[in-house]
Image (spheres, rainbow, N blue to C red):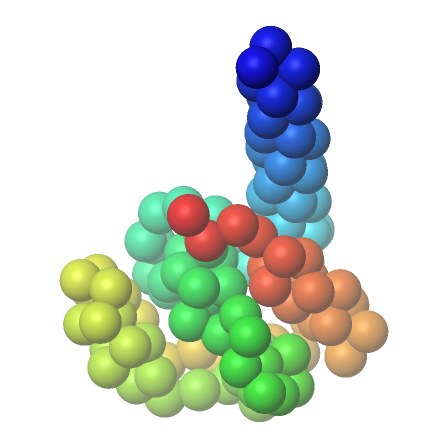
Amino acid sequence: MKKFLLAAVAVGVVITGVSADTAKGVEKLAKQYGCSGCHAVDKVKAGPPYRLIAKEYKGKPNAKETLVKSVLGGSMMKWQKIGKKYKIKVKMAYMPAQHGVNKEQTEKIIDLILKLDTK
């Protein structure tokens, strides 16, 4: 029994550590690429939190491509509809196309967002 509990605690520490590292990585890139003005990992700012974005898109076909397209091309009223599902109110009606990041940078941050644990 003690071995089982120790193993469970060890796995929990590893998973939590990875999750915390992923969140820190998202925050770092978000700040670097100018995303943190409208987004945060766990709270609603002008746009939805990254963890809810991960929850909404994780496991969906073409999730990465859809999100990259939203970042680079912008989107209109997307999270006003989706936000109701998660009981959040997103302040911005649109996300303007982000010209300050290239496709590779966008894919890098989207990969991290999709790795966030969604509780």
